[in-house]
Image (cartoon, rainbow, N blue to C red; front, side, top):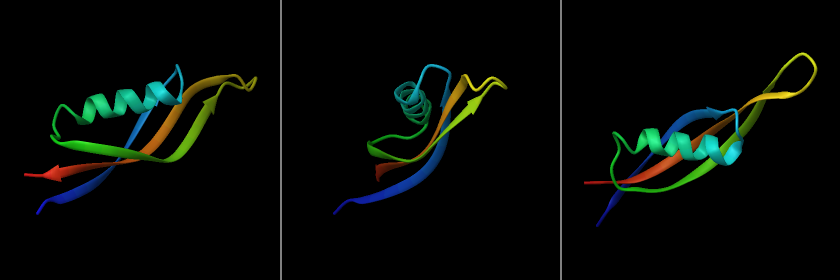
Length: 67
């Protein structure tokens, strides 16, 4: 029998959503083992005063199997 745990993290990138997800998973994988997947819950954009995108932000849930 295996048991999985889910944690929620936030990550950001000026390049885009995919890069924000990859950066977040790379950082989590430094301290969490057995990552099985992730669900993006929320996407947000921060902008400059002229409306141009400054940064993409994602909130996601990451699941991993507990040893």
